[in-house]
Amino acid sequence: MASESATDQQSDKMLGRKDGAIGHLIFNNPEKHNAVSLEMWDAADRILDDFAADAEVRVVVLSGAGGKSFVSGADISKFEKERGSEDAVHHYNERIKGVYGRVELFAKPTIAMVNGYCLGGGLNLAAACDLRFCSAKSKFGMPAARLALGYPYHAIRRLINAVGPSAAKYLMFSAERIDAEEAFRLGLVQKVLPEEELESFVAGVAGRIAGNAPLTVKAMKAITNEVLKDPEDTDLALCDRLVADCFASEDYKEGRRAFMEKRDPDFKGR
Image (cartoon, rainbow, N blue to C red; front, side, top):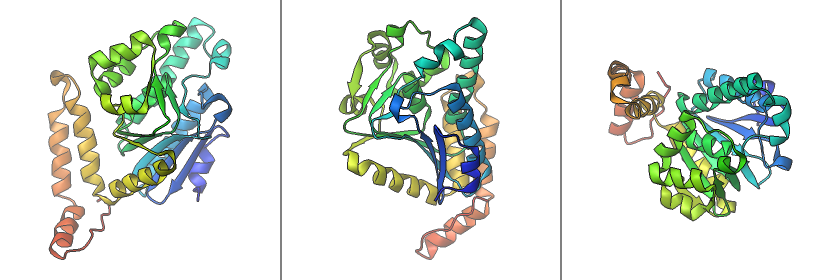
């Protein structure tokens, strides 16, 4: 059932829902293959605020409504209004840069559940997530070169981190779409599933993550982000502090007790 706080933050085209420890961020513009407007990005940011503040939410799943697309990129019909001048383009680009960066650096694990088209900004959003699972019918592509759009540093870095430089260049230069199996071969997605099994599989993965020690998962994500930085920018003190916090936690004691008592641990995130 949707929580009141998540519902308060949503719009009709961007939905937030909580299912126990799993937060769902749903792009709800199916008639346009879940193309995203500035208003939708604003609503997504508010929903993420709610998920970040709720200690009960331990993992976030991003998905698209309608069964045809994850996210197909920016809503081109809004370009004249939202990106029709130099100032408007700058505002739009800074706004979406902030949301993509927020997903990438979100303290809790994020999962992209891709069912259908995942194009342009949708591919960037999926690459910003920690894990990506897709249905067998899904298609991926970066059409910027066919639209004469500039593609920013952070988006290209995410794609390179996901598939490597050569595969990223092919996707960007050719603007070709690839199928789910090719996306798996490139490492863009971690598993391809029949459409009817995708949701239950993702729920199972999210549930397993949510059942693990939150401080450890948080530390692993933050340290992974540090590993991906240039060595001179790596915050080793932060990494050490996050590891020390795990060993000093009540959850560490609970994990040891549960292991000795041969039972599942009950982690509290403290």
